[in-house]
Length: 305
Image 1 (cartoon, rainbow, N blue to C red):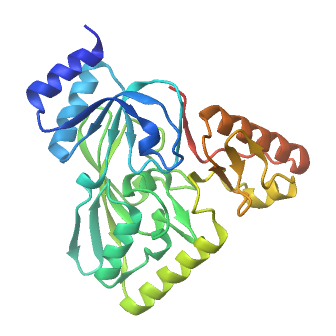
Image 2: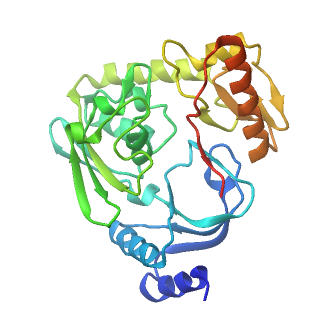
């Protein structure tokens, strides 16, 4: 019996309320709008469903691909021989345990969490309002923008470790660095985090969010599918500036293009494939290395199969 059939039976018998899809097109679940069918995809509604599901997968020897909003992913056009688990809106509750803290599920979009902070009169999360991702992914990679990072606000995180034990990280245990945390490239499943914020004037908080949103709209290609910043910021410089200096703004491979608006973004002009984006990224890295002596490192997570 294949692992797919075995898991189909377990889900039917023990998790009948779990949304469970076969051959789900990943292009529907990534901001790049690129990606072939996943063998199976699960959409857990509760922490309890997630824990039971992860137990089934562990017993079957199947390593899942955990995603939130799919905003930092480039996924193969071929069949994804894996199970994808989406930590989406169903795991996005927000609570306010005290006057200066917010706790939220890993699936909540950062924009919604920033709006919740605004509603509570709490400042410090304005930078995250325009980051197109979920809390879990943002904590895992220490997402940031406009001078703020998740390390500035996250004080604790609940997660399942590789043995599916419920754990909690506090403070320095997150090991935050540039686009890195203790959870990067591990089997841990993030469940939610608590953020420490500062009481502020809602009008000032909203004005700051509006200002940052306008700056994003004016500088970034938000009208086209992308995975956000394609490359990490190199030491002492900016990827976009180096790419522009190499004369690659507007450079195109198939349906993929270095944005004409912001060279740090690779966009899907229409019909871009996984290979189009990979070839373009390779060309960009080679050109920047040749012209500037800097080796760019991808920020987008590449899933080959």
